[in-house]
Length: 396
Ligand SMILES: *Cc1c(COP(=O)(O)O)cnc(C)c1O
Image (cartoon, rainbow, N blue to C red):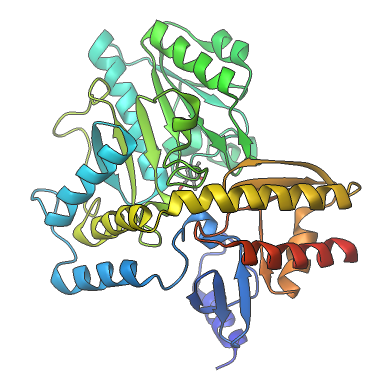
């Protein structure tokens, strides 16, 4: 069956909210994806920073297949073995105290926002709290998450969103200070901005925000949905800043392909009580078996060591390419295996050119290309990527 058949079938029925590339994926192997024509593509997108372990990881597949055969779902009125195991493992690994499993990143953000409002309500008895979020941030597409997303074009058609959100500038501590009031219940930010263009928070900024939050009894929510789960070389990026959030959101690579996210809190910020929050599927046996397997494999296969090594190599490689193409590449930044190059041409031009040469890349905004390969990527894969990227840049 030819690929156009499936594209037409999909377009005939799907709500048109994406302009999709004309590819139909069939299967994956390691860092490669294969389409229905049998063509092979080097994947530096990893399902948007999701497929950390690469495609077809045996230990991971075994874990979800055996759980699927045993028990897929029970409600949250009961416990399950994988839920208990995953909850203990993720809290220990992150250094947080409590976890609530969700079905997506956006839902994890919703839970974090409810936690902050509940914390403020418990403290003041008032329902007039404010949240400080960052310009150029991205926190998801549901109404609450959208309300704290710092991109006007995403928000405008859906106003009025939740009230009491004010925006400050990442890496500008004074701009945060200026927005703090008696009503501020939380500051939410990505430790490394993803969709906004791969901007890591600076140490001075994040430590400064932590201090401000402590002084004013405000919760610091770090959204590590994209930069967490090892992508920057530590399990969570905040570990590299010498601070800890009160609330942490995580998703994407948390389940490495099954839909699961979570928000985690310290004991102090665990403000939600029975009846406050829930989810039919959240943390069901299938997804928590996946989370558990992912955390085990990270440890057993020393995935973080590979991120450090391959991340440094990717950094060197992209620095060299930047030197070779100074007219096209304006900037290069990032941490670990979350890096970006800022271009003087539309990112789509490079992405399309690379795709013709069987390399998958993804943009972050109009002019930035994001490199978020599987965390098991090797030097040889980075060399291959660089070869194709150079050819593509030469053709511009
Ligand atoms: C992807 C992303 C989200 C939203 O996650 P979904 O699973 O798509 O809802 C939220 N925050 C950040 C930082 C993200 O990268």
